Structure formats: C-alpha cells, structure tokens
Amino acid sequence: MIRVILPPYLRTLANLDNEAELTINGEVTIRSIIDGLETHYPMLRGTIRDYATQQRRPFLRFFACKEDFSLEHLDTKLPQKIANGEEPFLIVGAIAGG
Image (cartoon, rainbow, N blue to C red; front, side):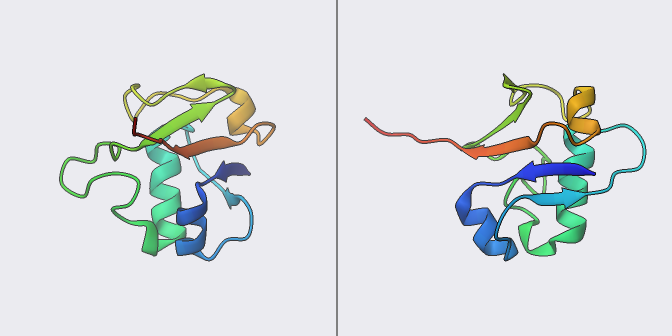
C-alpha cells in the first residue's frame, strides 16, 4: 500500500481527512502514483500535473524519503520505503512571495 500525503487544499478537493492510500501494480514511480491518485480521485485530474504536457504543476513539489524528487523524470523509480508503505510520498504546495 502506497501512502501519499497531499497539501490541505488537494485533500479537501479529494474529500480526504488524512493521507491517500493506493495499490500500485508494477514499479512505483512518480507517474504511477499520480496515475493512481487521478484514477481513485478523478477530481484531482489536472491539479497535480498539466493535462497537455503531463508536467508537474509549478507550485507543487514531490518528496520521497526526505529527498526532493520534483525535478526528476516522472518515470523515476521511487525508493523501496515508498513502495512498501514504510514512508509516505509527499506532494507539497510550494510557497512563493517576498
């Protein structure tokens, strides 16, 4: 079971009180996690990645095992601790301003 922690506004949109739990067949990658989220929570389609380009939305960051995976290719294999549910995959809303 893959555990995914979403930023509060996406949890509200998906009607989640806590983290999302997904079952992923095959390799656990950033893409497979986003695909799983969009399948189980269709209201999240287009909120994490752009419909046309499939790229990460600008103000979202991806973290796995305390490492920033935001600039990695979506097909990057994630650490085993994410795959076995020991650690959650975090999607974090970035803050901008001055």
